[in-house]
Image 1 (cartoon, rainbow, N blue to C red):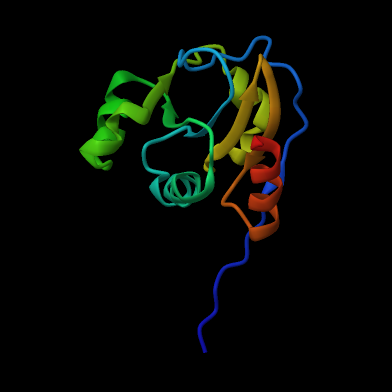
Image 2: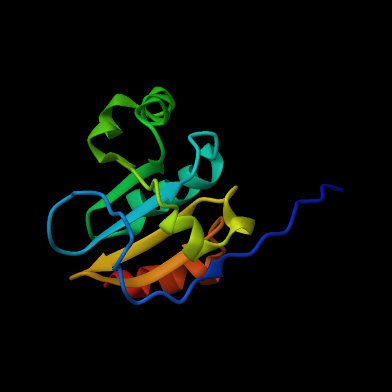
Length: 138
């Protein structure tokens, strides 16, 4: 019998983007999956595949870190997806403060609409979390 590690997706209450460094991707509604390290490939990729399959708004995949971190992310991403890659500089640690130190090893995904975080989730998406995320993106 195979045992799989159980996991859950945590939804964080955050309604304002004030003080959070964000990617410069233009105006409007978009989704993003971000991590604090390019090593968090598995969680980012699960979100990215769901975005690709079902999301009707623009989306981005990124890392909070240095230019070297972005290069590492690019090396593990097909060239056709490079236009969706972003890097966020967060020297003040605003994202980590919001998400909590315990979530530093997890990817997080959000939908931004008109300067507001519509939904912010941490960790790999469960089916229920994805349904909520998808509803929020509409």
